[in-house]
Image (cartoon, rainbow, N blue to C red):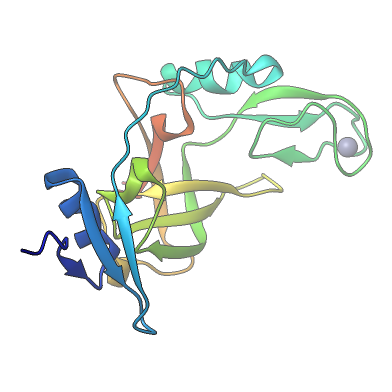
Length: 178
Ligand SMILES: [Zn+2]
């Protein structure tokens, strides 16, 4: 009598089997077989966003908040929270970023952390904004890999039920502006 779990070559299929029965065998490209088991555990992690708080509260208001160097001669604008300027070292202030930008670069993920595994393949992009000196790494939704190109106009969407996480914002292909 064999109780050998079923074997899969795609980890997504392993994941599905783990959900179903709790054990599976993953055979990699070299033919190496790994017994994989599901072993649930729970943890409540208490995390403070501290000085990044306005960024995450901004997402709940449909605002994408960046930071701008306070030194007038510099004025570098960052698409991410940053307390001090990386160019000149001066403190920054919060600003609202545009919610429309362009794809600077992109990748399609066929694997991801547990939270995203069920959504593979999914797209990630570095988004650039007019007047902003750094890029924002975000999910791109409502499009597939073959839709994507460098310079593609995209616009932000915000989760109406925010989780206070970077996943509260994602971008979609921009509707043509009139
Ligand atoms: Zn500066």
